[in-house]
Image (cartoon, rainbow, N blue to C red; front, side):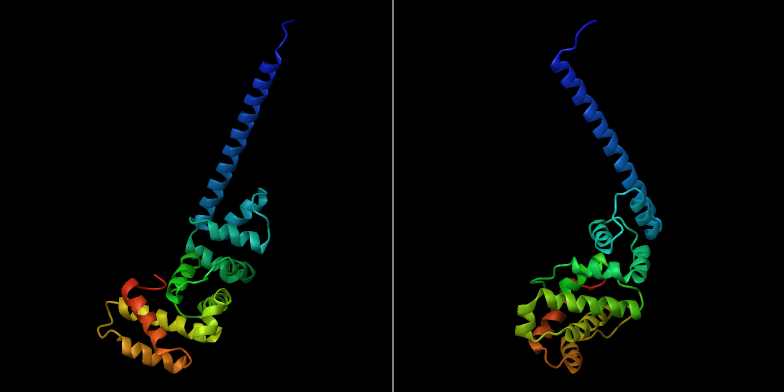
Length: 212
């Protein structure tokens, strides 16, 4: 009976290991592809499928990470899911780092991951409230120097959304001026300086909608 050399055995084991690894990788890729396809249509089913395959842990923080780092999810389905799973929404908000970001830019970044509803309602108010607290937590120096509070940021966010709609809508003929924006905003947020509010206006005027 012919003997098999040690190098030959090692080579055979290596080939088998590589084959198994490739097979597992392909299976994992197939599962991820399938689950993402499901997520594109119905978010909850896709997440449940990943959990059933042991790829995603059934914990709000892990689900939030999956949502945060996955760009292919259907945002309409995701919005419904997050509205129902406020525990996941809380974890998702904490994944955002708004340190040293200008407020309108931070709000754009936030709405890129967590899409704003088309109409004002309880869910939008919840999103802006959570964003306001997170923004202040990430910017203690700005809070101290500018006098920002979560309540003030909340007011400024709504002002930015309304200004975004005003400046971008073709149906609004008489656009809000910088002076009008400053006056209207400081009525509700009196502790915020005129210069800071003016810079907010300039950002929307030059860059565009915060929730587009």
